[in-house]
Length: 237
Image 1 (cartoon, rainbow, N blue to C red):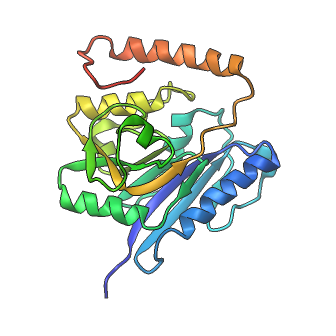
Image 2: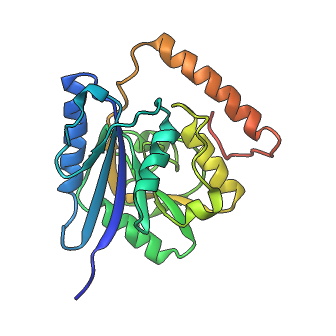
């Protein structure tokens, strides 16, 4: 009897309104419905920042409410440490998973033995960046191009080489740092154009001023961390 492939899914959520809670619920529902349960088992962990929802559990998930202050990588590391499957997928909550998306990424991992990390194709975003849906894989390390930071699907063994995600990133530039780390270690990443997961874009920040303040400090840290290297086309900052 063929065993199921298990994939640990870590979703960060900040359901500070009913509308945002619904976005997370719809994300989870589309994920659960996207694959044959006899073939792929999703172990879904939601890290919820809205503490007053506790002890609410999103259906089909383990929902946790950290005491620690929010940090994008800090919370992702919590989810990574709570799980143990061979494959792990780091997700925003504003996603819609299309049928068979994970199967397509797993096919790419099986076909390209040196592929360590992948992102799915967003039908809203990626055509504008010059990519075609269902047109093979696109290897590279450019943020928002090959590296779609809202959904990163990787082999857990990657963390043996990279270590934990850098927790200095509160929100912005986390995907740039991830891409740079893979490139520095020569760990191959690709956009899998046959795996479709649509990104609806984040709406959890309160204002442009808040967004700019967070972004400026994190771009500064990113530049300080990586400016001693020959960056080439690793990042898109």
